[in-house]
Length: 208
Ligand SMILES: [Zn+2]
Image: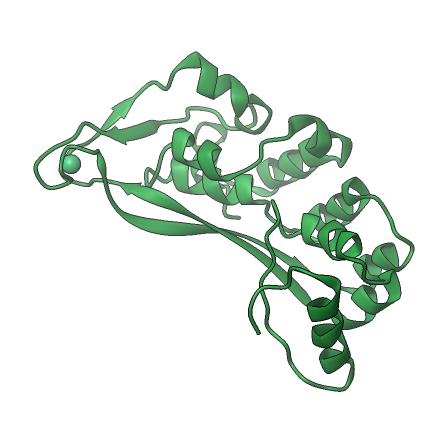
């Protein structure tokens, strides 16, 4: 079904799912995790959300750097500082951008790709939703379960030389405070420590 924007539509969708139908729908929120707060805000009861939702996926599109005019560069301090909480765990970061050429109509970009945040609603997350836990707590549990946020997903594409930090900043909500509260820094430490590659090359293994 289409967008869920009000309580009536939401209840139809959730009742259908409770009676055994697989329902796909969309919501306008900032992230997969914040969809839970959005559904509560629409007026759904926590028990209805915890017993019906099995997967929440947030998706954003970012432009791909044009391969004909791509070159390495050092981003502005302003944008680097926005991402510093994420980037400080990765050494020897290399950044690329497009200079602009005929191929990309002098924009520096050619084509687009998507970044994702995929939240699986397991028993622990169900329990948190049922007890109306804060978004920060749900995020913390999701990160412990290994979820990558939209920003994580964006940075992995930046460090792979596919897009720019500026593109990721445009389509994600970088809230270092919220994510620090949820233990994002521990999460990033975990990703780095799990990586078996040389420290200087870790920046390219954020996918692991
Ligand atoms: Zn180009």
